[in-house]
Image 1 (cartoon, one colour):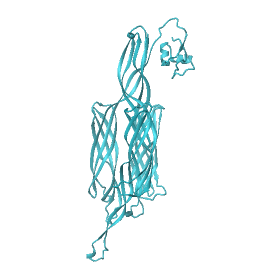
Image 2 (image 1 turned 120 degrees about the horizontal axis):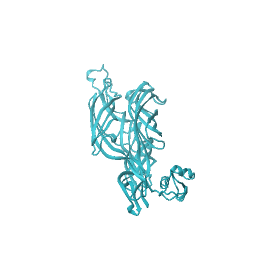
Image 3 (image 1 turned 135 degrees about the vertical axis):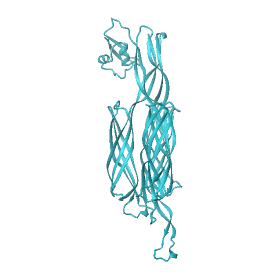
Image 4 (image 1 turned 90 degrees about the vertical axis):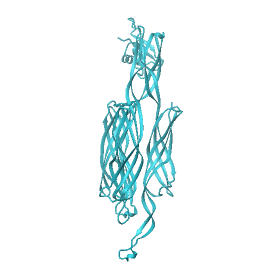
Amino acid sequence: MGINLQERLLRTLEVMGETSAQTSVEGTLELPGNKPAIDRIIDYQAEPEVTEVAVEQDRVIVNGVVSFSALYVAAGQNHSLVPVSHVMWENGLRFNLVTDLAGAEPGMDAKAVVEVEDVAWKLESESKIELEVALKANLRVTRIRSTVGIVGVSATPPTDISVQKHLLRVTNIVGANSAAGQVRTALNWPADQVAPITLLDLKPLAKTTSVASGADAVTVQGSVDLLGAYIGEIEATVETRPPADQPEEAAEPTRSIVRQQKLQFINWKDAFTFEKTLEMPGAETGLPAEAAVKIRDFKYTPAGAGNIEVDLEFQAEATVFQPLQLDVLTQISSRTDEEIEVNKQALTLEETIGKGSARVPLAGGMELPASKPGIARILNVSLQYFPGDVEVLAEKVSIEGALDVKVVYSAQVEDGSQPVHFAEFPRALKLAHVLNMPGILPGMKARVEVVPDTVNVVQAEPDTFRVEVALKVAARVSRIGQEEIITEAVVLERQTEDRPSVTMVIAQHGDTLWKLSKRFRTSEEAILATNSHIDPQTLAAGQKIRIPRGA
């Protein structure tokens, strides 16, 4: 009896393990010599960046750096002149995190997402900051595995075999690639913003807007928001009071309009766009694709008349998928006295069970500490989200987290100078939201993304204000399971007493060491010992192979 196998090559993403780990880093940051001394910090940001992820046997090593930037009022200067400066320590604090992860092996792919859990800083002197940052890393180790699945079999005569089938739902990976891109462009400052005199800080935030697969390629498009602080010139009304010894009728203050330099903030939505086409052999128009964009470098230069030139370098990564439903064989048996041997392999597959998203409003009142002067004008409110517990329940996902609120404002003081001040409110807004998601069950994995969408600030009193936020909350719930499929099958040679001690065979297309060892009732080790010239991973068609007789 002979059998012919119908094969299908599957390229699947296997999740080998997921875990999380925490660490903290601390150190002293010294002000560069070209920066003025610090009187008080009015805003700050700590941002971790992963520089290396290494996979070793049963463990993952993550290296990176936490950059720290501060907006501050310079010491020993007239506050009415807005002596605000900005400093960035790009390599502020380095971190190294080693965590155990059973099943991890060298050569596997690892992704590490590192988030800030807490920041504590202290101004030790006018030129030194003591900084401590708590970090949490979410790690995911995967590999792309190529497996041949048997989707059909025929025999001569056809009635000599029976099969069992199983419907396999699998996401076939067509391809994955990454490439660097660059955008250089000139931008006109928004007309509704005060024109900049001095740019203090400008940070890019890239977001993907479109991922489209085509013939052997994927095109990633997106836009970049710019967030920053700068000094701009505005018109202001100044009151001048006469000396106290003037007659009562002359005691009325005089008012005049002058131009003053003031601290300004900008949240420039969709300042410019980017596009990158990546080569992707095998991709076809309409196939689903995912992409991520990471900013590698960003520079900006004033171009006169309030305009700027920007130079952005980025890295785009994309993966193209093909959802498949296949009837794969799980058993092949003979109806005669001939024996059929099958080779089975287990696939570790991740299946998305549900997706959901919602726009969640949050609001809360903030009251300044008693040590802070009252608010004359709010200049900027920034938010930072800290994830909390995520629990997958029957038909729903429970998501918890909290937002830090930071405010920069002009203070109301008696001399009318309105110096700039800063206040922060840790975990001031609490998120507790449930996303309904039919079909999900406890024990499944959830990946959650929470992004502030809109922020509205209402000032009620000099020492209080209200923050109203809308959050974009999205979750994807998946199940990781194993599917066992037949990858090879062979009809065994009939056992005879007069078999030769060695049989010479010529390898055919599709032959493997496993097939030959089973067909001739010997072992792979015995074949390798007799044929030192062959590659056990790849047998070439036409190769002569000596098969020793088995026991």
